[in-house]
Amino acid sequence: MKRPLAYITAAWDGEEYENTKRAARYCRAVYEAGFSPVCPTLFLPLFLNDNIPDDHKNGIDMSRNLLRRASVLVVCGYEVDEAVMNDRTDPPPIKEWRAEQTKLTTAKYALCERYYALQDDVRSIEQLRKGAENIMREDVQERQPRRAQDIDL
Image 1 (tube, rainbow, N blue to C red):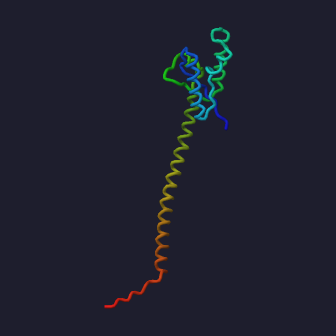
Image 2 (cartoon, rainbow, N blue to C red; image 1 turned 120 degrees about the vertical axis):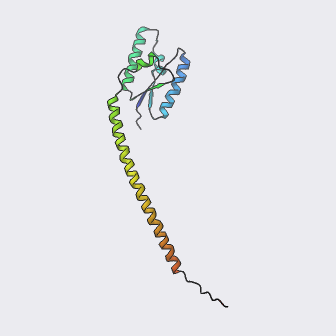
Image 3 (tube, rainbow, N blue to C red; image 1 turned 180 degrees about the horizontal axis):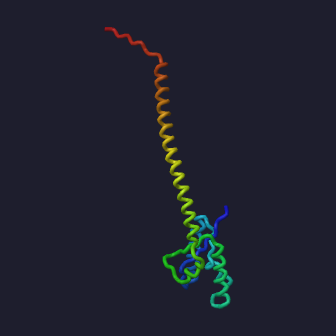
């Protein structure tokens, strides 16, 4: 199964160990939701030094390149700071979202209509089944020999 890429970001604080722990938890949750998580905070510090200006700039460029390739931007945590906002470079594709929403809404209404039609058909079939059972029950009762009851007075 091919999973769409999900870029993970949050308001990371200065504590590298805590950031790594939180990023790993966020990535796991996104993975369990069916995406392939991409979180530069987890792997860029392994080979880039943020204190070196050239490394810092290259890290930002690589992160933005990964963001452009991702299908989903996942912002984790409770705060949104400037660093998080820098991760989002393009405006959201609102026209595409609205077109998809319209398409999905139309499909939903069509499915609802089919569901209600099927519901009516099930009711009719259930009535037919009950009627057939009643007829079969009457047939069985008619075929059974009746006991002759002699009553002496």
